Amino acid sequence: MIMAGYPTDLTAQRHAHRMLAVGAIAFVYTVVMVGGTLTIPLYVLWASQFGFGPLTTVVVFIAYVVGVVGTLLVAGSLSDVIGRRPVLALSLALTALSNLGFALADGLTVLLISRVLSGVATGLITATATSAIAELVRGPRTAAVLSTAANMGGLSLGVVASGVLTRCVTAPTHTVFRCYLATCAVAGVSWLVIPETADRTACRQPRIRRPVFPNGASRVRSFVAGGVLVAASAGVNGFFSSLAPSFLRDDLGVSNFAVIGVGVGALFISALLAQIVMPAALLRRDIGTALLTAGMIVIEATLWTHSAPLFIVGTVFAGAAVETLFRHGLRVTDALCDPGNRAELNATYFLFLYAGLVVPVLLLGFADQAVGTRVSSTMLAALVVSTALVGLSLGRRTESTSTPDTFSRPSTHLTPVEENHE
Image (cartoon, rainbow, N blue to C red; front, top):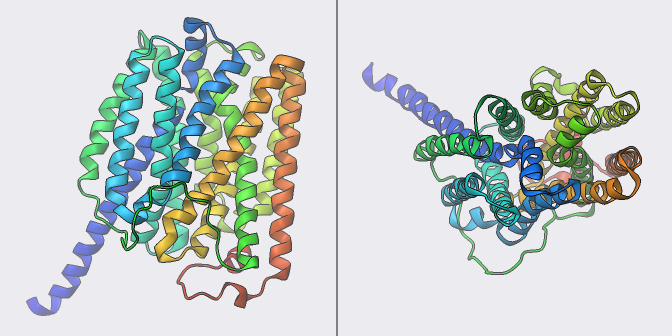
């Protein structure tokens, strides 16, 4: 009887170890993503302290995006080569270093350098953690949910925690980051239980890598459609991550930093809740595009009505759209991955996302100086919605021309065609 029960006990033990490892990866992923939004409520304080305006705030935010995109281009597939564990550790170390810089910042230069380091950490973690979770979790849907929860959960926790701490503590531009460094230390301990999941077979080439795409025209169109849609949703994310705090303060008269943190964090919180409460049948690109359009219209109406409650309503719609389109793209990307290029294809997907952050936010920053908030935000809304419609059209064209044979590579994952009809 002891021998008969041994395989069952061993299987249960392995399952427990796997779940512990997945939890550790998700925790490290969440902590690094917290660092990406921890600075958002503090831009107003830094602007007053160092004497810069909205355009400089956009430049500081874009420094973060430059770090992300540059890392995805240069080292997006690094974990396919040297392994997931070293890259996760490097990402966490760079996050801690960037936040040490924020805590000691005495001018704009230090802020820019620290934001670049934070971007590098994010660029390393996104493709690596997403790939590691997919390799440990059985089922692409569960892996996508966990990756999205860690990503969006970290973003929401960062901005809300920073807003609340800014309201409650003295010297928030220092204290917030000291508290976060303690969290990074806890994440470092959890990293110790993470196993290596990558099959390291390639040789590292010290060169800039071009974005990679799946083989086959229909597969490329399916992948690009998901990328364009997530780029559109990223434009909303970029606005909330850079100029939304000053918008809440200057246009809606909100002066409480905790309220500002919650108002901006509502985007990420609603994105996180959307994947919990929305039925899987509604997590589709057409639903996501409709939610994104509704959210942008309502947020734009806020400028004319000066209504904070209306802003929250629009934010909830936009957050649900961000989650829907992000998760859709992750699942399509996972379906098209081969074992040897999982991190590389994930890196290309995240390139779409972070490229979608740059152009709308930069446009908004310049336009706000030239024509005012109302006109510039209308331009942003038009750009976001039109980009989403392009992605939706491309995805429908792919669906109408694809057959099951188009995506016939052996895999246990859903194909894009199967995913569209869930």
